[in-house]
Image (cartoon, rainbow, N blue to C red; front, side):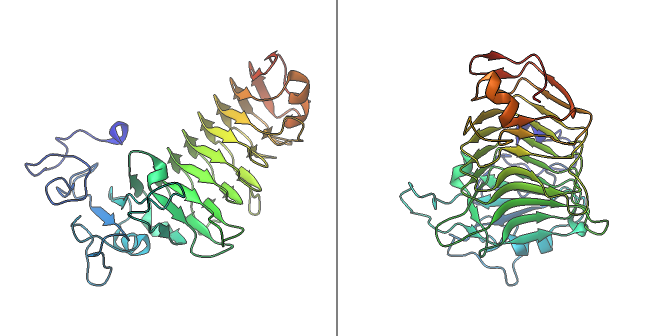
Length: 315
C-alpha cells in the first residue's frame, strides 16, 4: 500500500495515526486517504457486529458484512477503498476466523478508480471464493480498479470458478486495472480478460490452476498492452495464454510446470509487437520451443531455461 499512498498533506487529515487497523483508534477514517474526501469502507464477515442494513461501513468496529454492499457505497473515481479484514479460512489455519468472503461481485462502470485491498500480512490471510460454481469472484467492468492482497480459491464443493475477470464490451469498460500481491489457487481461471487493455498484473502467485492462470478469452476482442511481471506460476495447466494479443510486456516471471507440455508456459501465437524477456522457465532450451509459442509475435530476449539462456524466439 505504501507505494500507492499520496502525500499526507493532500486534504485535511484528523490528528491520529494513519495505520491500517480494525479498531477505532487505528482505523483510517480521516476521509483524506489518497484523495480529499475519499472514503474507507470496512468489510468483515467474521465480525459479530457486521451488518449491511443501515450501515455506512466507515466504522471499523461495525463493518459491513459484504463486499457487494461496499461497492454500492463507493463512488466513481473519488479514491474510495474497500478494506477486507483478515480471515483464516485457509485449509491449514486454526480457523479462529473461519468465514471467507464468499461472493461473486461485479464492479460496474460507475465505480471506476476504486481499490479492493486485503488487510493481512499475507494474501493467504484474506481468502475469497465465488458464491457458487461457475461463478467469478470479481468481474471488473470499470476503469482503473486496483485489487491487492487477496487469495482467490476454489474450495471443495465448487467447480469452474474464476478469480478476476476483466471485461470490456463498449458498455462494460474494465481496463487499466492493477492486480498485485494476490494468490490464485485451484481455480479454473486465475485472471481472464476480454478486450481489456493496459492492465498491470504483477507480484502474484498462480498455483494449480485447472485451465489457465492468465487467459485471453477473445470473445469481443483481445487482451492487449498488458504488463505482466514478477509473477510465480506453479503447476498450472496453462500459465500465460494470450494468443493473438499484441503489445504486451512479459518479463521476470517464474514458470514451473510440465516441461513436456505444449504452449503451456507462454503462448503468444498470432500476436504482434510483444516483448518477452528475462523469464525463468523450468524447461530445457529444446523444450522451450514447445512449452512456449511465438509465431513471429515479437521479441523474445534472454529468457532462462534449465540448461542455459535462449537466443531466439520459440518456434
